Length: 159
Image (cartoon, rainbow, N blue to C red):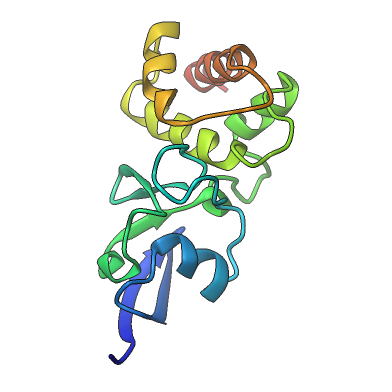
């Protein structure tokens, strides 16, 4: 079967690629486009390490076919930081030591950003519920939750 041609937007930039009909978005991001920030943890959508946003929706890229990205707006961990440096979530993850091995960190940051875009002032229960699809084997979750809470406070305060 011939490869499929896909035109999409990734982190605000127009992107074109060829993919096999069965190829996942995770595979295209990492292997075809060289965007290795998105990690593969389980390959079955159970860990959240490969989380990306597709048209504003949080998605496990290991479960999404790359061909489904046609005409979509995709945001990956590479698109989180801005021209001025790290996004506040990235800074707070560092400040609170909310990471260790780093496999889950990109997925947690993408999911946390999606949460704060929908709910800029989440309570602890909401944060834990929202991030329940992301698994971490190293840190426990308290530091991650504190980092998200602190980021929400900083984002809410006037500059």
